[in-house]
Amino acid sequence: MRLQNLGYAITAHRAQGVTTDTAHVIATATTTRENFYVAMTRGADGNYAYVVLDRPDDSHGVPHPSDNPDATARSVLYGVIQHIGAELSAHETITAEHERWSNIGQLAAEYETIAQAAQHDRWGALLAAAGLASAQVDAVLDSDAYPALSAELRHAEANHHDLDTLLPRLIAARGLGDADDIASVIHARVARATARPAGSGRTRKPPRLIAGLIPYAHGPMADDMRQALDERHELIEARADAVLAGALTDKAAWTAQLGPEPKDTKQRTAWRRAAVIVAAYRDRYQITDDRTPLGPAPQTTRQKIDAARARAALDHARAITADETRPEPARSTTARPAQTL
Image (tube, rainbow, N blue to C red; front, side, top):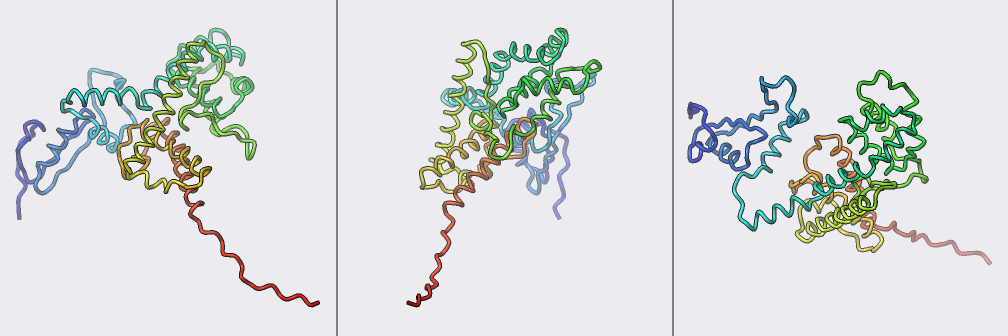
């Protein structure tokens, strides 16, 4: 029987070239991919990773803003794999920077930031018309929860909810005098009331979403804000199309789960519209796992919403291909009885 070697703890840098029977690795959110690889290949019989999910700091009485309370071992290790510590060549640096600033995650963040600024006055006026006092409106607009409320109002409108009618009803439903954060309370009420798109059955309209994920910023706003939003709208749609086209050209493994591209023109258009949403989701959340179209389980509320949309699009694409490949029912060959003259 081979015994496990005993030794003192060393860093991954010093472990280069060292071999032991088993290796026990402590991985944190700051661990790089290169160091993790070195550490996890030192053991001849076994390599075990222990993932740190909390970072106690006695000098802080409250959690640090960079802490992620929703972190899981899977999400931390996924981040480690994405964390490249090696220096890049000039060409690789240019390519990485281009990807960083042109991917849908970055463009969506820009769109949402601009939309929040562009709709600031409109939401303020809507809150006042809905029954809030001037001081309450100011408190909402200054709240840390306002960005989330602004995004929720935009989401509700993209789902065709009439905010001019809905918001006064939600605010009047229960008093806000004892609320610690009015913005958070209104946000929760709006989210609960608009969880489903407006309308039902055949009267329900599809949500107004960019690349099937990002709620469209509607309503009056300054011309330069509208132009900035429209430019990013076009860039997001173009990026999603390019990501899908590249994946199909390269025959990426995940595209096989979309089903074969239909031959019928109408069905092919619908299939591509659904496939683009899946591609946009992968690009927005930097999904690199080629085995599954949607990658690991989503970690945040926003990603869970987008994942549900991407899953619906994936199912729709599969249904389209299944419908096209389904054989037609055989025609009856039973002879008609002869008529008596």
